[in-house]
Image 1 (cartoon, helix red, strand yellow):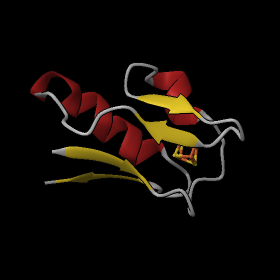
Image 2 (tube, helix red, strand yellow):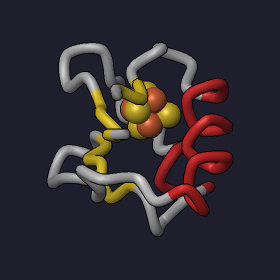
Image 3 (spheres, helix red, strand yellow):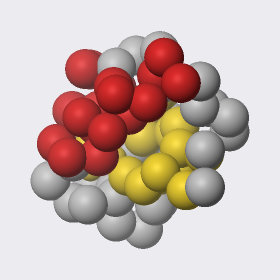
Image 4 (cartoon, helix red, strand yellow):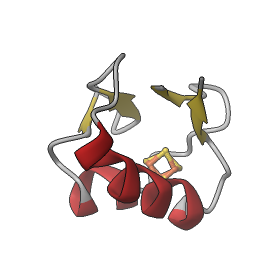
Length: 63
Ligand code: SF4
């Protein structure tokens, strides 16, 4: 599984990297960057919460 952030949709609210700093970081413009190309099983629940809490629907989990 891969964690992805759509850079076009992301509006830089910061919710994801504030909630899950181990999964996301912010770039110089406050937009989110996903850390992990390979999600560990232990991170999957947190990743799903991040997906559900992004107001721009910018976060996805891909196979
Ligand atoms: S919560 Fe969504 S819109 Fe906000 S920084 Fe994260 S990916 Fe971007």
